[in-house]
Every structure is written in structure tokens, then in C-alpha cells.
Image 1: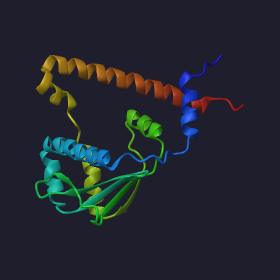
Image 2: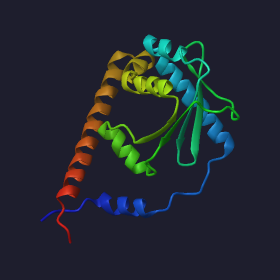
Image 3: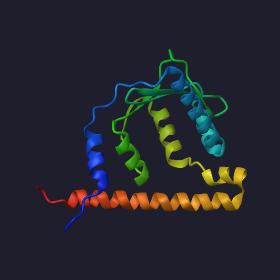
Image 4: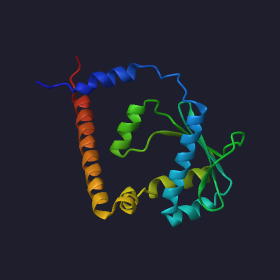
Amino acid sequence: MATQSPFSTLEGFLKNLPPPNWQPPVWALDEAQRRIVLLLNHILLQEKEASRRLARQNGRIALIQWRSLSLKLMATPAGLLDRAPNEAQPDLTLALTEASPLALAQGALRGDKPAVRIVGDVQLAAEVNWLVDHVRWELEEDLARVLGDAPAHALGQAARAMTQVLRQFLGNKAAAATHKAPT
């Protein structure tokens, strides 16, 4: 007898909810965008080739959209990112097509790239794709600078183990869904 996951009821409930019309306060979005730009620049600074490639796109603007949220980023001469002015026209628009945050999280845990609708400059899109494929955040290295090597390594191992368990859970769940007999 197959047992049903306790999360399937919650997942079904969440999938049937309409997308919320709630919009975070403007100040919260503004601050979140500033933090995202700082994090992206921190990651870019760890990869010299990424900065060189981004510097060649100086002044180019990419608009990233998901549902009602958007972030307009501009390449700087230093090969970093800055927020573009609100009135600036994007050279490239990247719109995530998946509306469900749960589905996006599941895909990220599996290591899948989300489905994206791309409109605009092909060369800028190719550079963004290169960055996504080749630049990785070395979180364990950053933690080692703050906590020391041994604690950072232990946290990294724990995070990798937890990610593996989640991937297995999602993989088993997906396999069960494909093999589920019609009722």
C-alpha cells in the first residue's frame, strides 16, 4: 500500500491558491534590491573573468521580472552591477515564467534553471547566460573568513547533506507522481 506524503495536501492547497495581490512596501523592495546588488557584486568580485565580461557590457541594462516584482540592473565600467534608474529602458528583459514559488524552489533544489522568457539584446543575453553557468558563490570560503575553516567546513557539509536529502525527497516525490495510477 502506497502512503501519501503529508506535504501533498499542503502542496495541493498552495497550488490552488490564486497569486496574492499583496505588494511589499516600497521601502522594503528598495532595500531588498540594494542587498541583492551588493550580494551579486560580492560574488562577481570573486571571479575576474566575470567582471571582465560584464565590463564589456558597460551601461547595458537588464530587467529581471517575476510576477509583479522586478529588478533593473546596469553593468558598470568596473564590471559590477548597479541598479538602473527606473525610467531607463532595458536592453534585455528576463521574465521568469513559473509563477509558483514552490515550483521555483523545487527546481532550484534539483539544480534546474528556471524557465525564462527572453526579449532584447542577444549578446547581453549570452553574457548573462555565461555568468549564470560559470559564476558560483563560494559560501564556505566566506564563512571561513568569519568563523574559521573548521566550523565553515562543518556547516558546508551539513548544508550539502540537507540539500541531498531534499533532492532525494523531491526525486522520490516526482517519481511517485509519474507512477501514480489514475483513480
